Amino acid sequence: IFGDTAGKLRQICATSSLNELNASKSMRDCKVKPKKLLNRSQEENELKINREMCLHILWNILKYPKHIKYRQIHKQALYNYLSQKCHTLGADFDQVLWKMEYCLQGWGFKKGYDDNWYYQYDRIQLLHLWECYCYWIYQQIMYVLFCCC
Image (cartoon, rainbow, N blue to C red; front, side, top):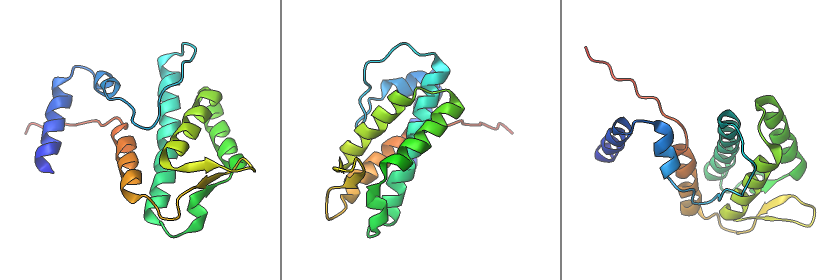
């Protein structure tokens, strides 16, 4: 683990821009839909909202795999939360909602007749969900402080 971490830190230090490093990674579970041109901060805010929500949902399922309440997502609650976050940060709500729904489908959720989201497998696919969680963890910007004493 230490060797992998050290290698990744060297790669980050060698890269002149952290954004170049993040842009070089392809998204496994969420493909970007064609969209209008956005300013950089708006795109960063969309990513921030999606990352936060994805990590929250995935962590709850991984931490409580037997609790049914974490296997279903109420459409209106999701809509209200994303709407409030997008309004606060000035992000494109439609784009954030589309990416979130695409991610939910990639994790194994299915939209029910009532428009709520339900995890479709009786047994939790822990490895797949863990890989998705790790992906979103790596989407976070990491600041490295080197102290030369």
